Length: 269
Length: 261
Image (cartoon, rainbow over all chains, first blue to last red; front, side, top):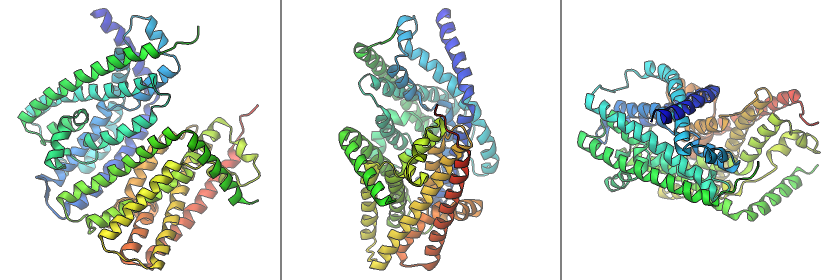
């Protein structure tokens, strides 16, 4: 157990070093994400001008939801892990993992975790700029049970984000180019992950459908727990469904890897 | 030099190439269609809960979003890939290919290929505009329609110029990484009504960066008919931004050093 932890601990530290090289990329990306927050502020500000609440939530509560979502994106969101996996398969770089006692999924997960440590630290900079400006508009109260449940929900959201990206990357075993699939899925995730609007604004039937899909648990679920959009029973039930999705996606990833390797041809000496 | 003939030859080559990869055309058309759907769904959901955004009704907003998407899809269809390839060519020193051609380098580089998926989806965006106009019972005159088309072209010129300036930064910087997402972020402001902007946001996104004007201008022309202020504003913005883009590109070109052996 200790040896295993050591092995992936080293992968994590290597990932940390290589991701620090891209600190400016993360920095630029987080700065532009602030512009996305500006769009949210302007659009929803105008929408709330006609009504004090929308679906029972005030403008400040809705804005808080988007700020939490913004932080979560950098803490647990998958950035380009799908392309990284794809590149390694296409260029034959996975050969080394086939010859060593190392699990490719666990290795990539360690790298993903290190990348999120770097991007999570960098997002503190734009947050430090945004929060003083928005401090009168934010309504994030400290409710112990919400923060307690948000921790596993956020961790599992990260697992779902990464494993989905990993599965898309593995499609390279079958397709030369996965970019189309990735961007197509991004559109679905943007809507059903609650990044365009809080999902509780959907008509009730559609919301119920979204609730059983994995995208709901990628971003909306932890943000909804923290910002009071879900009650404690809903949060507990959600955690259960989220755990099932983590298990299902892990199995899918395992299956794709096993099946994909049967098609894989390693070239070179 | 007959630039039209060159452009037509490039367009023909692009269409033939696209027909060789029909699966790609289908996937990318779907990708763009889905993203347009995302924007329209956002409007539909918000208007489920409110009747007005900055004084604009649901169908007026749909018309505005459709107009902004139309400009963006035309940009993608005609120039997007070319300008991204231009940045890559400048970075790796293979821009010589365009400098050696008997024509204006910026024209040759920006019109080399067409992206039929973007052009196909511009018809979908136009369909959204027509649908919204019918729901609003609009009956624009021929002059209004011509003005709308003219303002769309002006909007396209502004978006093209912003992208040329961004890509020309590669003459000075080693990487244009992040420009793609920054352009998309900027274009999101173009889907909002001008009345929604206040204070500093109005100064930046309405007055300094004209992305709001170039989408609001044509939409207002369809909604309220000819408004001289908007037309002058949009055309002046196009003239200023195209001049600026030419200036930055040619300044940058002087710094270009080939990397060939």
